[in-house]
Each structure stands twice: as C-alpha cells, then as structure tokens.
Length: 112
Length: 116
Image (cartoon, rainbow over all chains, first blue to last red; front, side, top):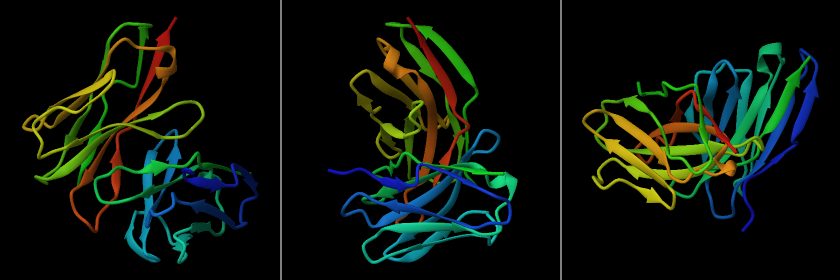
C-alpha cells in the first residue's frame, strides 16, 4: 500500500515567486492536511481538505492556498514568496477521525 | 484553544535503557485523541502511539507505552530497551474528537539521542 507522496522533495525559489506543492494521499483517504514546519515555530497547521472542500484553516495569510481534486490529491500554493516561507511543508492524509494522520516525507522549500 | 507543551527540548540515553518523554496539554474538551509522532532525520513523521481520552487504559505498542493522566492533562511516552533507531524528534500531539475538526496541535518536540 503506497504511502503519502509529496512532490517535489526539494525546491528553491526566489522571493516574489509563487510555488505549487503536490500531495497524493493514501488510496481511500479523503482527508488531506498541510502543515508547515520551521525550527522556530515548530509544526503549524495550514489547512485541511475533505472531499474537495476546505474544512479547516490555520492562521496563515491569504498567500497560502490549497485545493483538493476529486481523486483526493491535493495541492498547496504560496504566492509572492517571502524569505520566512522557507520551511518543510508536510502533507498528511487521514482515513477517519481519530485514526491518526499518515504523513508524507515533505517538501523542503527554500526561498532566496 | 488547545496547547501542547513538551518541556524537554533534548535528551540523551544509552542504548537499552528506558527513557520517558514528557508532555502536558491544555484543553476544555472532554473527548479527544493524543498521539506521539516520531520524526527521524529522513523527515517522515511516523505515528508511534495513539490514545483515546475516553479510554482509561494506557496504550502500548511493543516497546512504546504511555502514561495518560487525564485529570492532570499529562501524556508521557516511555520507550523501553531503547535502540539506536529510536534516535529522532518526538512530537506529542492533540486532536479533538470532532468529525469536522481534524486539526492536530503539535508540541515543539523533544530531540532524543540514543547513544551506543
């Protein structure tokens, strides 16, 4: 059974650019969440999608957006990149409430 | 709002020893889930153990067990017979028991070193 797949693994972007990260959840998992991990702030919740609808959103500016497709694959987009957006972005999928999330290996984004 | 606190930023123990990682949390919810996740250098977050708040029995997974004290809002992780492969960041995490709120709140993590 394939795990959660995130692409790309590494990304270097310039300030002001935009970026799109992709996440393919475990087959059958309809809930996909995104987290930002930085040394200073730790793991912070970005948003959660369930059946193509955003169900929860964290406290991030509108530059951070996401979407989920009918096959449950999800993308997150960050526009007008800032240096502070450099982080590990983790995607996780969930079979059902309380079952615990299965995480991908993340995308390491570096903004220069 | 829920918060999760891990008071030990870093710990080191000898291989084969037992180590306990501390975690406290704050919530007004009565039903919720608690987790311990492990993040090795490979970056992948791995679910170690899961506890449902309405179950009094402490969860156990092989060498990993928890001490769940609901009244004290404490959720510590005990690793028995520690192995070199246990070296990782460990995150304590909280999630409400609500179908429309699957957001996980993580602690800042404890970096655990298992020494040969």
